[in-house]
Amino acid sequence: MSPATPADPGRRIVLPGVARSFDRRLVLLINMVPLALALIQISSVNVGLHSISQSLGAQSSDLQWVLSGYALAFGITLVPAGRLGDAAGRGSVFVVGLGLFALASLACGLAPTPLLLNLARVCQGLGAGLQGPQTTGLIQQYFSGQARARAYALSGMVVAASVAVGPVMTGSLIKAVGPELGWRLPFLINCPLGLLGCVCALRWLPFESERARRRAKAASVKGATAGARRERLELDPVGAALLTGAVVSLMLPNMLGQQVGAERFWLLSGVVLGGGLWLWWEARHKARGRVPMVDLSLFQIKSFARQTLVSALNFLGMTSVFVVLLLLLQRGLGWEALPASLIGLPNAILSCAGAIWAGRQVLAKRDWLIVISLLAIVAGVLSTAGVVYLVWRHGLSPWWLMATLALSGLGQGMFGAANQTLSMLDVPVAMAGVAGGVKSMAERCSTAVGNAIMTGVLFSLQPVAGWPEGVIAAYAGVAAAVLAALGLAWAFALRAAAAGRR
Image 1 (tube, rainbow, N blue to C red):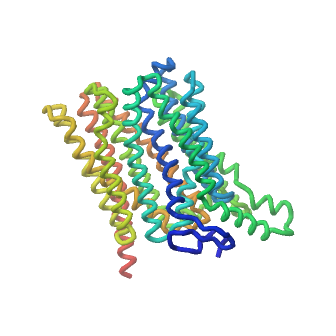
Image 2 (tube, one colour):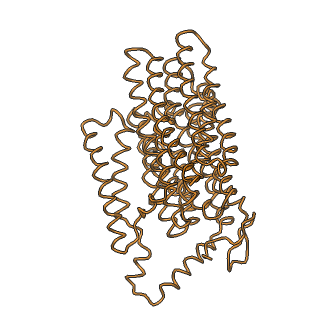
Image 3 (tube, rainbow, N blue to C red):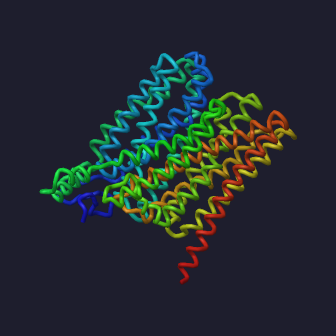
């Protein structure tokens, strides 16, 4: 048995050669709270942009970087952080990432200028990216079977709740204490919570397993050359740099929109060049007996490759639903930020319920649960488009959107829990962090591209045809992306069923 492998399948984690045991519930709790904090930072800032502009005198380009700097730093850190956690210890990297996130949040809340705010936002994104893959790795390492499915379902519930709570929290604080302090408080709150999380992590996470693994590695290379020892600790910086370049080239032009002009072609060319060089380098690196950042054999694990592709297609569409809707409500109908954010609460509630239900059913229903969840998402998106038309053309109350958004939320909650569980089903524990990082990076890239496409459709049609036509066209694009994911998921389910019959 590996020194990092728990010996007890029950509630307690018992490690060989370690005197004390660890509570799986506390391990899960200490991972869920930072996950919530990191995701709230994605959704909450949208509501505070106007207040930031007034408080700091920020221009539109500054505000764009408030959004993009965090997302970009988050996205490019995920895979290297996953590899670092797999190699050096997930608990240690988790604490470093959470500490950086907490201190950067304090800097965001105290920032006197747009430049310092954006620099702090980048550091905040780096911290979130460092800690993110460790959650997947720790769940994969210390949970198995139905307990692992429940843990991933809980993480899906936290994601849904965080995305909904962020805008409501920021909007409420701005209304309660005013715009100057209101936008700063969501950042400042992260600091004590993050530092408390670091203290709890040092107490509750099984760092002994990491120390035992390092001792086992040291023993295995005793007497080896210094070069061999260095090779064992290699983190593949060239592979990390190539992948980072490809991801930046993909995400940056889609995040910055009109700020990127003629450079867009060269940036997007960098996706093909950087991605191709990265694949070549990783294969060559492994062939030379070295340790690549991402072992490309990961993509030969069918369940991981299939579910990552399906998730990327779903994120290409589904994550744009609220971006488009908030533009309609705030710019088209003149709603304030707080009521506009409240319209998504039923979506979050049913998403949480869907995630918990899917966590109980996924190991029995497997691929067919993915199909059912995507059908619910498509039905919710198309019915939302229909309600938008009735709101604008026939005076229906916009609050009817709560019902259709709830349907898509139910599907999204089911999808998130089932997809995460199935994607990691056959991934070895030793590769869990980097696998989680790869999947999250694919989802972040799809989100950036999807938001650019769907808002581009909206802004192209709205001045000519009007708000409802622009929104409906954007939602047609969302539905097309989710239908593509549904088609793939259906094909995978049929193939799995046929294999089972043989």
